[in-house]
Image 1 (cartoon, helix red, strand yellow):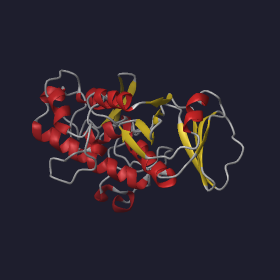
Image 2 (cartoon, rainbow, N blue to C red; image 1 turned 120 degrees about the vertical axis):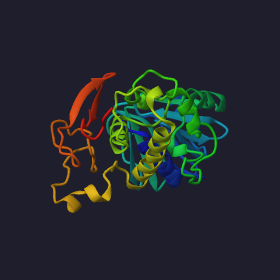
Image 3 (cartoon, one colour; image 1 turned 90 degrees about the horizontal axis):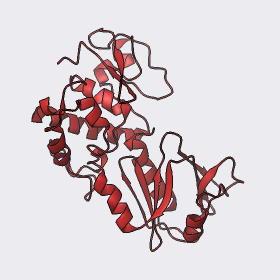
Image 4 (cartoon, one colour; image 1 turned 180 degrees about the vertical axis):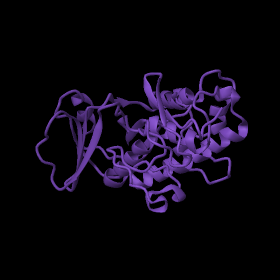
Amino acid sequence: MPEGHTIHRLAADHERVFGGRSVFAASPQGKFADGAALLDGQVMTGSDAHGKHLFLGFEPVGWVHVHLGLYGKFGFGTGPAPAPVGQVRLRLATEEDYADLRGPTRCALVTDEEKQAVHDRLGPDPLRAVHTYSGSEPAVDGPGTDPDVAWARISRSRTTVAALLMDQKVIAGVGNVYRAEVLFRQGIDPYRAGRDLTRREWEAVWDDLVGLMREGVRNNRIDTVRPAHLPEAMGRAPRVDDHGGEVYVYRRALRPCHICGSEIRTADLAARNLFWCPGCQRR
């Protein structure tokens, strides 16, 4: 499933391509035909992202709410839009550009109130952060921006920190890769209870997520390895994986840790694969 940086990147891409422009809208697949008919000819007035939820604004019609889920994806193209191929849920197009949405878990037209209800049930998003604990400037001001809301829940919870980081009601946008990597980078055992984290540890986790995920938006991929541990610095082979950039533990089970040499472990936690280093992430 795409993590939060991908959704924020999509929001920016839609704003860049369609913002302030009248769009042609259609649902070649037919499942969003009524919504597309209302959007057709309307001007895109804005975009927003919170966690793994994307919103495309078309005043006064409303917002297109998209959750990609496991299989959804957007494909962008330039030039006149060709005949749709495959199951295209939604096509947005101008004379110069188009975007096709395929396979989302959700694609629905919602009101301002319904959009707000989605924000209300999600935790703070590192990419919407009103602040980091080190004092950087806000990315967005509005719902889902305050990391202290997440800390209030984490600091009282007996649930493992690994599970809490994946709970979208606690923190929005963090997926399996960022979860594994930020816990490694901060030396935190994934099986520690949330209430056993110190405030300083939580602040370091949040600030690290903000930095890593903003890099993910800029580069359109996840890279988590510090410069001193990159292949060229360590004289090791680069990672070869469909998921992209350099990582410490994600999908590296049974391989040696880049730092301590311990064998990376994996286990199932809440139906997702957890990865960690027992040498660097001690209880």
